[in-house]
Image 1: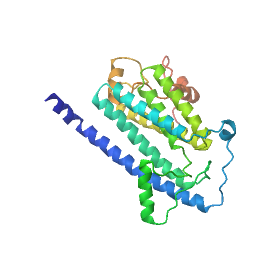
Image 2 (image 1 turned 90 degrees about the vertical axis):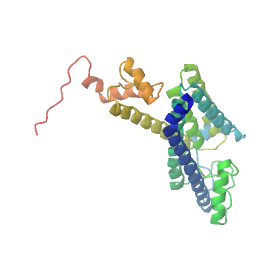
Image 3 (image 1 turned 180 degrees about the horizontal axis):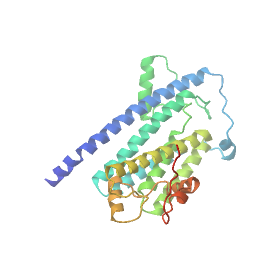
Image 4 (image 1 turned 90 degrees about the horizontal axis):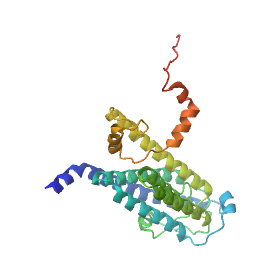
Length: 290
């Protein structure tokens, strides 16, 4: 009876999780079709030679192209399985997984835009898939979802790096042991280096992937924190003083650790918030004469 009651209470969250999975499936299929279009445009262009890249001239070449896939899939598997296991409740596990799926789908949507607006020459030896008909175009896009085909010019930005940075950020938010977070970061950094070493992506692809991924995660969880304050104003934010309300706030937003704690301190100093909102002095705001 208790199990049925729990399942009934989780039904709305499970439904939203299912919707997020449908969303990412549709977006991934759309992204693969965009990649095929980018390959056709690259094939028709006269720019076939790889561009000059600082990362290529710095990092030694690695011929085993399966290595980046190994680092991405292993980190993704360990991250999701570990965070699901560490979740205190079924609801927390669903929320963590749903957040990852929504954010990953959104990043893939952004990647679809960056791939189609600018086509860079492939940085490695690659033969694009030859497509003759529209039906074949749709079918190849579908088979790409199970890894039967790969495209050549899907450069900006790196999907492998996006997954790696997503996992690293998830560990920063939900990890409870510093050594586990450090291991995830070490694994991710080595994986990113293998992406450059195999010439799978240009360095700019990786840089933009890091920037966009971490930026989206920062924006999302900042909105979660702000929205929780509006819906439950009696609860303090993760940046407030410690107390019983902080535990209540953490249980609401389901974030184990603060994100951007160092960056927030930098922004406070750069903007002068500490000077204007000093806790030991009154705040005087200038009055306009207009």
